Image (cartoon, rainbow, N blue to C red):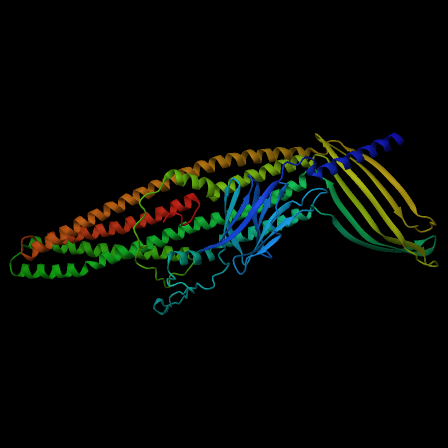
Length: 606
């Protein structure tokens, strides 16, 4: 028995030494990294944060609420700086920032745990890491419900009032429509709730790092030896994980990664739906422009029809020519009716994306954005941007990191684990004929567990002192040593490790597939953009030719040198070319939106 106690005491002493070493990484820490500067500058869309180090550094970023803040969590354990603890920036999106330092070890400077940037409102951020410099662009998030931008719906479209957007001269611009549509898109609201859930999981993981406290109280009444007695006990119990082979730390890191995944997924939902709205928006403009073009020649067609009838009545034209002109006029009317139907379909699709009723009044302008389309886009640049900023790739990378942490957690569950448990309180018991005088109680215990393959073992030592119980006159003082070996009790742990390995391999394979898919999508969007650009240039050249041709034929018709059907045919071809130009412009802006979505930066290419 003495030998057993000695072995248990030696084992527990060794566990305490391991915990002490693991809790003091400074014993083998690398050279510290120096934080040189933190600069926050306002930008038109929000703010830009620049963090400068003396050398490359590792970090993760995430946002928290209540209050709203952006956290830059430094993974490197030794980051030092002579910068002030905090800096106020006034009434901006980033109101102030703080350096949160850890408690310094004897003889060392305090190290920086993380940087906290307090925000005036919920915001989203984009990270640009450049070796020893980190740039974070911050902009306000879309508010959860539309406030300034509203649509008034009426049963009678003629009574509908136009939408209004405070501070915006054009409430039906693409930016305003995107803002309104994204606010009403339910999947975005669900993605926002997933972020809130991930933040709750982070708080749960952080809480597991600290002691768990419980207040306990009990009272007992009964009869012993035909005499009534009473017993009371109260106190506080603390349970602290001393050493978990890094499992709690990995779980905390996994919760941080989970927040980043939730935020990137929300960004992906926004990006996908923004493309749908943008495509419907430009298709509506294209349909409206096409109808205006068709309606634009009605005056000239009617004039030609009257001239043709007058010349036929005078015997200057044959009946074949009259029928030819009437056939061409019927073609104009058919094309106009087709354009009207196309506009109705485009309008319904547009309102559907905005989650509005068909009776809603919309005033999307019948004109494309002003300014000449951009001349060229570098494919290599687009591919580089996609690898860096595309949300699909970012999510897949984070999932690989998440599954790597999951593998470490699964392996750490079977590694050495040491728990400390203690209770401090007062208790007492007495017969009803005796006074009840509570005394102090406490116990302290330490327990170590370890897994070997499918088997599990544990050893514990508990020191207990209690007040005298019923019928006792002295305190109880005891020390309990115990050892337990569970045979084939850890089969579940082995399957969890295997499951984590399978999940990691799947995540890595998904990352490779996503990269290939994104690369293909960027190339397809790039080719579509080039095709639309060429189509647009070709349409402009044909319009110039058809305009000159119609001008010459009109002049010849005034001298009776050409037939009316020839002039009308020239006008029809000119109209077709204008319609082709509207379709080319629609294809161009849709292809541009697809390319921006493919690289993960909305509005980058204009």
